[in-house]
Image (cartoon, rainbow, N blue to C red; front, side):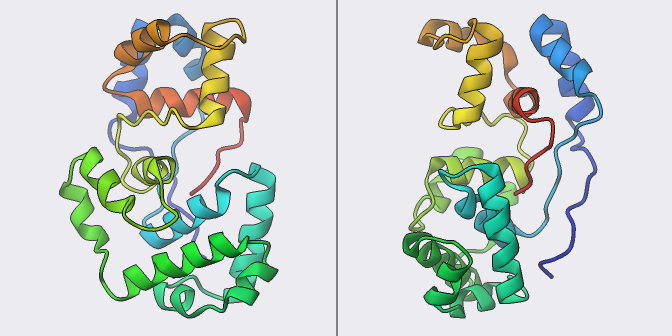
Length: 213
């Protein structure tokens, strides 16, 4: 179940989004052309998406990948039941903090007991999904937004709590200086309803290798 590689098909909206963003924004057009072979990777397992996002909270991509690999090796499979029943010392041995270990166990328990039913989320609005996910200990807005992008493939997510996204916006649109709310609001309006795609290419401008959740 858990070691399967993610599918690599583009979301159905990707080509239209790229065309419209390129027409509206010269900077975005250049980024899309530069990384034209990059695509959002879809992972169908909601538990893995959430677990990977929790592991990645507030640490580097390289550190998160190392911890994730040790976690997979230690658990064998990352089913909800296996996560829920995992012992905290084993999770800590993989490199997780005690708090993150408890968060992962809590996610596993909620899915294993069907307290969370991911199938419902496909028909729910973005904010409704975020609200439901944020009721889980350890899941804040950033983690929920990663889920919307990487699992549900929602087209208009704008995760402004993401440090990399803000850094890329500052670099490309404000000469590496902190962008003000007025100018950010203009970009926000310009990129709707494809802010997920704009975010993706801004991420790629900092790191060409896509992160997977």
